[in-house]
Image (cartoon, rainbow, N blue to C red):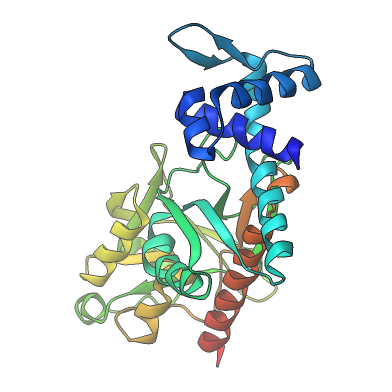
Length: 304
C-alpha cells in the first residue's frame, strides 16, 4: 500500500532527521523518499517539513500531523502484520506510564509475563507518582488511580472496586498497639503521600449507613514516592493508608497487617488512560485484557 509506505517514510524521516538515512533503512533511493514526502504533502495540502541544504525540521502542521499519524500508523502496521501472519501475533513497542509502587511491585513482573507470551513486544516504562500528561508525554497509555478529571481522556476501567488498606507492620503494632477505630489514628505515627507539595493527611472511612468520616492524621514521615511510604511502613515507622494492589504481597506474607477492617476504606479505582480511542491498538487492547485478568485474580485471592 503506497499510502501506508508514505506515512512510514514520513515518521522514519522525523525520527532519523535525514532523508538519506530513511532511504538506506528502507532500501530506497533518496529521490524515492523525497517523492513520497512530496506526495503526502500534496495530498494534505500543507508543508510538513522546512527544508534546507543542511537541515530538515517539522513545520507546525507537521508536528500536529505526527501526533495523529504515529499511533495510526502503528495500528495499521499491526493489523497488516496479523493478517499476513494468519494469526494474532502481537508486536511493537508499548510506551507506558505508571505510579512508582504499582509499577515496581506489581506491573513489572506482569509485563515480563506479557512479553514472554508475546516476545516481539518491547516495553518503554516510565515510573513516577507525578500524573503523566498523556497528551504531551511520549506514552501510549498511563495506569492511574482515580478517574481523570479531564473528560476528554479515555479512562478504561481495570479494577473499578479497588480500595485502600489501612496497615502497619507487626513491629509497629507490637510497640504502639492497633487503633480500634480510625478516630484513634490521631494518637499514632502516620506515613503520608505528597503530590505537588500537597500532603494527603486527611484519610476517609465509612461504617455501615453512617456518614463518612475524615480523619486528619499526624504525619511523621512524608514522601512524594508511594514506594517510599510502603518501605517506611515495612520498617515499622508508622501506619500507612495504601492502595491494596501496592501492598497485596506484603499483606499475603504478613509483612503488613490490615487495620480497622470493619470500616470501609477509600475507593481508588484503577484505570488505563489514553488520550484518544484511536490509540487503542490491538496490542494495547491485549495488554488491558491481560492486566485486567491479573488484577481480578489478585483481588479474588485476597477475598478468599
